[in-house]
Image (tube, rainbow, N blue to C red):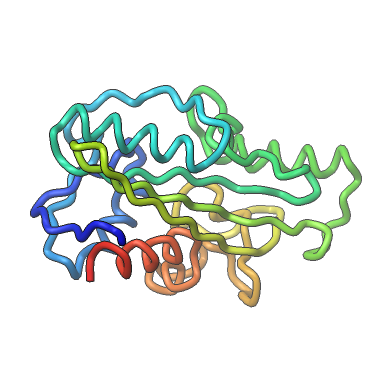
Length: 204
């Protein structure tokens, strides 16, 4: 059985402010004070894992150990079928040293063009993946995974969201993630799906 979360404060192990705000919104109903790794000036551990699960666990445990507080880490990425699942766990690295999402989106487009992948939804299928790891300072950890299927669009559309949202159109939607209102995005997103699992397991 999963451990119930009863503490008043939670560290979100991310330096991505857009992601931290999204997580804050998802946990808003549970009266938990959410602080990010950036707020606390925590160091960012090197993500050496081979899977999303490996990296989420690594980040959550590092933040819990450094703060003595329970910590939630998200490891997420975009897996493009025609690119053999790339960029996957190295999605952030495709953004270059300045972590510019536009650089990563442009690289995906170049890679698809180099493989002569037609600009058709079925040919540009992709999946956003999110793994959440909730770690306590005593070493206990709970982990869940959420996915959102869709396809890559070009040029990017929309100004909302963060990361690769402008180039990803969820299955069943006519809008990209960056064109969706936050509540609408959270209702269908990989992160929203993972959070619903985590909330059912640990917060209810």
